[in-house]
Length: 527
Image 1 (spheres, rainbow, N blue to C red):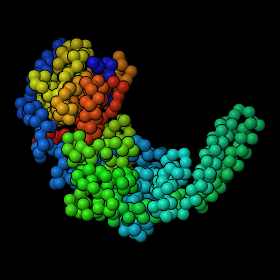
Image 2 (tube, rainbow, N blue to C red):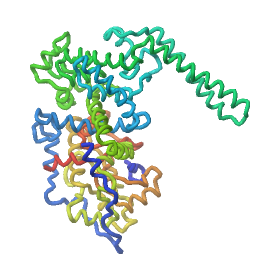
Image 3 (cartoon, one colour):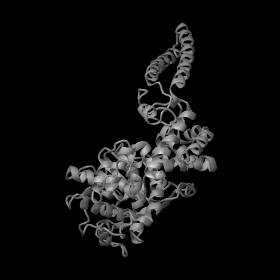
């Protein structure tokens, strides 16, 4: 079992930005003497754990996280928010720089989109996501790999799109470019030498190598259309136009750009229980009112399991591609219409390994200063004791709250969460158990902390964050990575990913635990 001292937690776009304030609210004050804690079995009036547990295992509309047609637009919007983090975290040079590079190609994107009858904003989002506006980037080490501003695979460009690509020469030039780039790096190192002769020789060599690199880039562009932005964008437009005709749906065409037409047709066929290949998919999509939102959110280990098995087996993020494109579109819109807002959001998105500070920004989220503040929050039902008098699919670590005596409190004081977070814990635990055929329980090793507790934890564990921790707000809990079986681990992974996709939570994989941060969308469990 993992204790807190063994595994501490690390510490709509415009709605988040507007919510950022400047003053941290530290509630409560230090008091002398002993702080009397509530029993961990005390439950606040109005919080119905049994009702939430029943929702998790229901198969009807009572479950707010179950797909229904009228929820599709909302689910898609939430997924775009949920999957934005990866763009902020991984965009080369930062998301603002990537958006700036991408925006330079807007006119070429619009021309290609107009020529093929596709949406320019979607194409622009795809460019930001695929290449971050870099016309010479290659996904791998070979010209056969996805390349250029539109990240088109060599064989696809030649055989499907009919692009002007001399693949053999492009391979050779790509190898020479890689070799020359290595020589440039070595020359740069020599140019830092303290020996004047070595430095002068290296600088001359560096200039020669850089000129050679520019020449090789021009030569490759001349024989490989993927590295010519206008041609590459035309190739992207050609693909989307053809896929759009095949599927009869622009979103499905976008998904297929990364997933592939064959994989997507198979997934749709698995969902509908029919053969969707051989040109049949367009009619099926129309007849069944099939959307990707429905395919994704209505497939799970419990429903349409064969379709979910395929989607989840694609290890290249294909199943979430549409949501990331939508997130990229919103980023480009913010870049043009609210550049400062984008910069502010980027700070929140890159503050942690997850977007928990987007869900609950520092400065506009109540932080508990000490044990007295937690006691008051429990008295006021702002924090709810985690129930232990029922079977809800989890167990509390015996060491949860182990530092409490240092503050004159009982460990049970810290066995509490915000109502939204507690509801999410119960929902997750019950859903995991349902998927795992009623077997196993999750363990909870950390819940609410106050700032004094967090500060002391930093002193005894180097992994504890000295910065803003969502544990000090009551919106986070930790689940040790010790499972009763591989099937329980797989079920837990599904629930984590599904709730993340709905922007209900975000989570971080720590060495010994999964750190779960619960966002405002969890309120749906309490309504």
